[in-house]
Amino acid sequence: MENEVKLAAGAMVALAVATAALVVLPYVQVRDIQAPEGLKPYSSAELRGREVYIANGCVYCHTQQPRDRNLGPDAERGWGRASVPGDYVYDKPHLLGSMRTGPDLFNIGARQPSQDWHLGHLYQPRAYVPGSIMPSYPYLFETKPEAEPGEAVLKLPPGAAPPGQVVVARPEALDLVRYLQGLDHTYPVLPPQPRGATAPAGPASAAAS
Ligand code: HEC
Image (tube, rainbow, N blue to C red; front, side, top):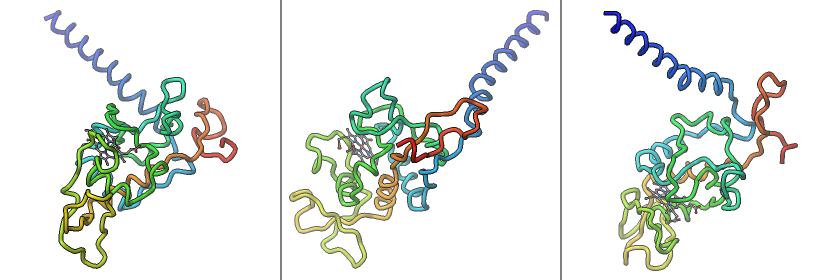
């Protein structure tokens, strides 16, 4: 009997320590984080696009977390400054990603603002980047002999559209591109302040640029 009590007590302590280290402490660290001044909440189109991003597994190949200069050449690659916790306040769930089969997309909206480019690249990546291993997403588009008024017709490079047909974007594709265009975290942030300092952690400031 004594051994069972010890075992149960040991298990409880191990669980309590793990919960404190993995749940309570991280929560305490980030609960007061505020959005940097330059960060806008997502629009409803961007939120729908975010769902399309999740549903299509973009996160399996793309990160959204540029690293610090000391940790890698992300800034030289043009992926932007290192991200700070405040950059993610509107991201539920966050889409940090862990694999970089493709480039980091945290600032893709600043790097590539063109809707035409994004739509065409999603329809056929290899029409823009020869040898790209990114999958094409043809089901986000419709191929037809003629577009109806108001439809977004893709401006594809020569030879990429099926002969005699036009390719138009479905609403999911347009939402996804809104989301990608909105991924722009190039606003300045201050390094995090020590706890108890007067300035709140991570606000945007013109002085930092
Ligand atoms: C199998 C891995 C893979 C998946 C899944 C994937 N990509 Fe990519 N992606 C890549 C690779 C590799 C590149 C670089 C070559 C290119 O531009 O096509 C890339 C490039 C890009 C670029 C251009 C980045 C730049 O800096 O020019 C964008 C935007 C993009 N992907 C968006 C997406 C979206 C949105 C999805 C989901 C619908 C997605 N990708 C899914 C591998 C992937």
